[in-house]
Image (cartoon, rainbow, N blue to C red; front, side, top):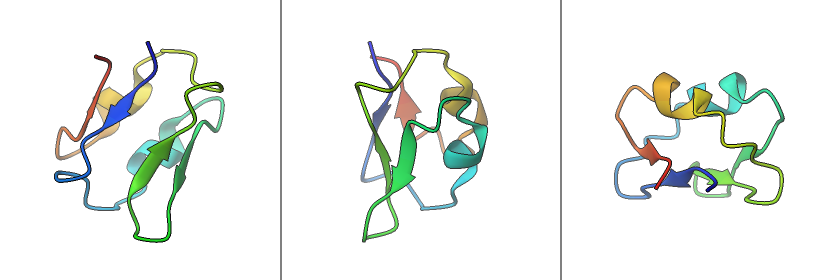
Length: 58
């Protein structure tokens, strides 16, 4: 299951973008992280990196 970003918690810090080994995360126009479900390999690196716990794998 691909990573899911909680839009209410995301602060737009881009830590997850930098941590994604397959570049499946980008920032949208509102400075919120967006996960490309097709590209996500379910590694969880973004979950471990997010300083505000805005990303989950469920």
